[in-house]
Length: 166
Image (cartoon, rainbow, N blue to C red):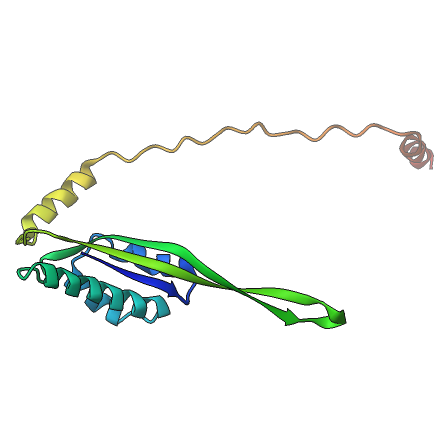
């Protein structure tokens, strides 16, 4: 239950940012979340996950979006188009337009009914956390540096002597 998308015209690191968020999620939840994401990669990932789900339904008639999870999403580097832009003084700078290869793997899982935790359990957990003693912060003692005493110079001595004489 896999699907491939080759030479997707977007850099792999940008697609990976979105793809990491959906590994281990239910297919139905992943498709819904991808609908509301404003990223360019979200649109292509939504299409490929939907394609992988359709492939799964084709091979196994009992597979539904709720019974499938995203097992793995691999985003690899594809072709790089190289172009050049003219610049000042007869120079040219390279422009690299990256593409990516995306592979989605789905897995069928027996549907489990997950119950929400009760409010009493949450309160007990909070009480346990409150009972833990706070870690004491030990401040480092820094020795106060004393300024060195000023040495008397001849000029200051002569000024003091002249002031005493007058």
